[in-house]
Length: 569
Image (cartoon, rainbow, N blue to C red; front, side, top):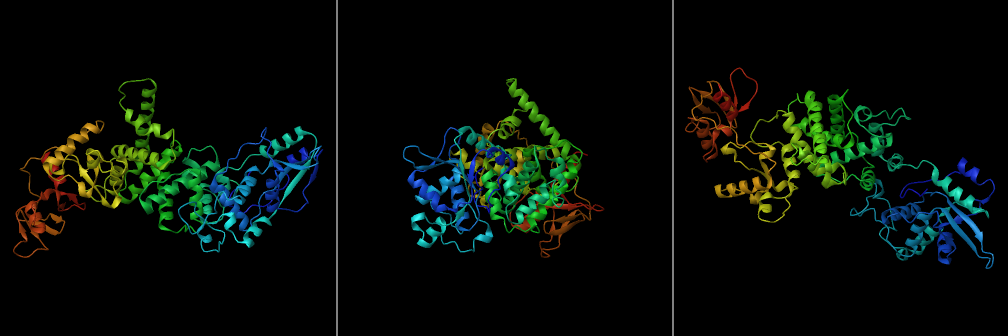
């Protein structure tokens, strides 16, 4: 039962199983002990580890650092259990460690200068809670020999509780060890549930804890999440919120391993549940629960990707997709299962193999790493967005933020033009542009399959560069079927008089366009392309510049979309 590094811990009471085990032993726990006594015994070689039943050293340097920091902050630490023996010939006293091996090693290695302590103001490593960053920490960043005499003595004089056990029966000691280790250990999330701070309370309230009424839990997690325990459920809440938070604030994915969750808890002690990120999180929870209420439960990786997906659907797409989301997710899951079966049966060309190679296998290993989550999510959004076909709130030609992010992460944040040249050049998000593989002017669609990430300095412009890139892209992405949109005949009807146009402002009158924001000499235009040229000073395809509001209608639409509808009549 090792101590939880960095937390305020009280001395452990002797459990009933321990009482049973020590009935025939002589036990002394009233002798005053201090940390310095452990250091002295280590130097003398009087503290021993029985490797027949003790496990090896497991703590990381970070765990040791936080444990020593806890001592300096005056926190109580769990009791130590020693089997006290006296050598027959030398009469020397030895203490075999029954419980406390990891903590003793941390104390010993620090006293020998093996590592320096963490400085709360240093954000490069393990993060401290925000409320600690302003507290005095004169031991921060120092090794034992660099401490003042006062602080060395402070460490050595810190009181500890030690149970000294005397018995000649080695089997009794083994039984005691088993009993001490045999209780149900706290999971990492159980330990986080006892940490101070507002984020702890938020996760408990959202994830739920059946033994506490006020922690009732959000229905998305209590009813829809498929987890093996309440502790796992609360951990899933913390992981999803981490991804949501980092995506909202830094536009990237993050690792969601146990150590990363610990660091996030430490950094969010001052968490504000009224922040826009927290409110957005709860809004997505409610919307996603509504979409899956009464449907099959969702395992963790699906809940993660659906949550991030819905988060952006709410921002950029018109309502109506909610009723179809569960069905389209089921289509995705059916294809994933079919792909897994095809791979298992060694089929050479399974119809949905990409669902295994680009998603399924990434749920099996390193599934909680940022790189793996990014790859899965890009594919998930790409497929479900096509299956769901939601309507964009902004019906213009450019990509939505969701589509841009999906392309960005699918392409591993690399400039694809540079990749074509044999260089892997990472693109900062704010310097990234989307290139239409089939040019928009030639009927190329503004969808994910026709999109490639490029640095704005390497965006193909000339016909030769566009053609060269298109050939390379098709060769290296054979599973992406890129087709141009149908060519629209040139002779299409002119919108009726009274049709309003939006880019600047204007409307059709007498089959011509009257712009309201241009001078008298330029306000009359013969066509949308003519209007674009007069507004921008360059020749453009006006059908793809302007939006129309037809008489009697209340929805704007891209002029080119209207023209296509007329061509099919």
